[in-house]
Image (cartoon, rainbow, N blue to C red):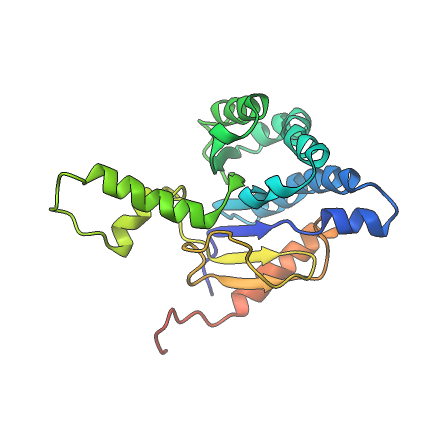
Length: 231
């Protein structure tokens, strides 16, 4: 049976789900925020070590100011509603992305959540916030160059390149799920998804249930993962 440690999710379709129901796009984002809690609890119950959710991409800055402002307030809503439960379930909060470019109040609430849960030893709920994978890869390479600019003793390899990525402390991504029917990875964890299994589901993120999530895990377990080799 395939071992499943790290699941990544592109939480797509909030706005389209809202429009289909006659709601403003913001309502879709609000319901989607609540669903992060639902799927995180389901993942924790399944014994997954890391759940990475794509919360805000570097490309999302192209959206309207009103929508961006609303999205930046949602971490306050999420942690205010669910921090007590996250603590009770021993879930640890982390974040990948460029925090210095998000509003100071939003960065502050993330820092507070990470500090508050820093000693938790259960599943890691990892938010990709102001995250873009191409930027991450360029950033990693520049960090390597900066560290060894006066030292030619170290050759850059796939293994040590991982040490410069945001995800250096996490297991490799085993499964990536994208909701809402789109079949692309949208600059999300390009390096980390090299040998991940990919599942694309039709449900928009607000309607993606723990049962839907479990079906994806069951599908993953059926996959024949050869990593380029032959069994």
